[in-house]
Image (cartoon, rainbow, N blue to C red):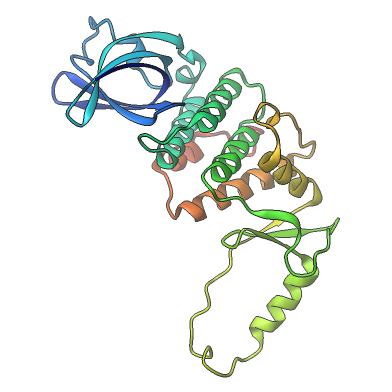
Length: 274
């Protein structure tokens, strides 16, 4: 079986003494595994198209459980990412998230588009890194089915213009008044069958009106407009990014080594951080 596809190299693993195993995210075929015979050699013509962050066209043939690379051409190499440790580490994290949320034979057109646009913005410093990261995390979660309902408070139906809370695991919004009433109810001693049961701990993210509006926008904007907003207050950018990360990681139920590394190398207190 042979095929030609455009895709982004999201992971590179050396195998044996000479070969490489690539994870490539494609629009039509999702994430596919591709072996590059002799891919570690600098003399291999496929060297350029088998690097991390390379978006290219790949001519493949199927053999066993893997596709094998016949030849490829580079469409965009995102060189700016590899030239800076902070940009590169954030790019690796976003690729890791994309790998986690994609699979073989499951089309991933919107996820691939989000990833490509995010890498472009990070590489060119078009937006604060924290903002780009948060947009990608929220939108990736929504694409994968983790779409919260944030139109109004889930209990009273109000649209509070003050502080709201995202109930992460239930994917819903709570106003401050309802959260206060809920907290008082939880503190009340229980009787009956549930008295000895363990309550699942809630994960709550406080959101200012600006952050609430930004999260709503990201979740529902057209793909080509999803980055077309700004948060003027740096504290809102920080809270937006923290909310997005908390929401995604809690629904995935895991963390990422690449995220920990990014957190360790990014500037502290700067606009690029989250």
